[in-house]
View 1 (cartoon, one colour):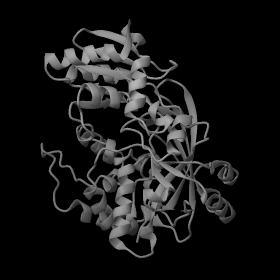
View 2: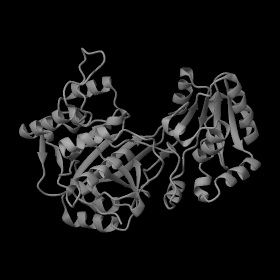
View 3: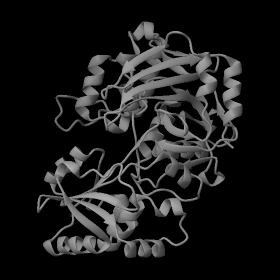
View 4: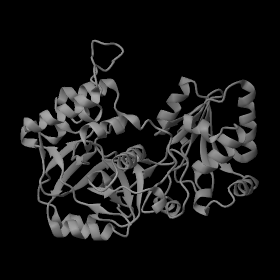
Length: 426
């Protein structure tokens, strides 16, 4: 059972810092050094200064940190509180979020969410689950940041089996608390929800819901580690989440494509021959490589850099029988995932990759768009596999089992920005 509660937020005083647009930032794990500098040029109070606490020195070509960045971040938060840039609420609230966006495929949508604190639990309890296997990531950085600051700074994006938005929407004021347009053109609007009846209704609705982590698995692992480290009851038992209902009409899922560096010519011939045994291959113009919308089990686009040729692949019946044999015992919804088919038959079957190889991305990379995938082929990769998006219904079906999707099976867009509200954990 999920425990979802309002929280006493630490948040910006927009009158003091100018606007939410000045201080909100993308999630820390998608920001490089030049983008960090650009965000700080927008405002010295930009959230990147505390969520990505590496004090880059532009005069230092190696961008080496100076001193303890975590202690400096804690001091910075205290200073921002002292000068009024940040304020700490005494009463708990929820935060309602709308995101109007243009998707990578050009379609327009409006996604809805609620920021709340959620009790941390182990995956085995079943109330909160990862939706895919994740690549091992460094938890030390996020754990050190949590220890030093005492706050969750960046929300985890999760999908709720029950949608809280219909309960929250009537409580919205005529004007949002803040608004910011991110670099992808997504218009983010945020409302603070102080109404206790609304808060209670959301808590009751989600008490029986399952939460599926869509983005932020490493942040959740950090929250579990911090909970266990501190022990006992207290605010450290909770973490900050942005919750969107699985039934939200603005929720869309996009694919993550695969790039393979195969190695020598013999390995490339082996891959090419094996692919033709597994799939019916039809040559297509490069502009028609995207298989989105194609029906059937195991349909992919493939681009071969060496022959400069694009193909549409369709899994052969005999290959499907072999897949079912290898994945015997796995749920039907999992066995029909394009990412599981590719991992089982191509990555592990033809190329002999292990789970460790896949986790370490040995000879494997990912791309979030077809143009990006094709462009990356010029940087040492031999083949691009273009995948279809996973339907929400299939995400839900796999989530209802004990199985997790292979890494990077999905790409949820847009991201939830950092800087809307921070959750105290001590």
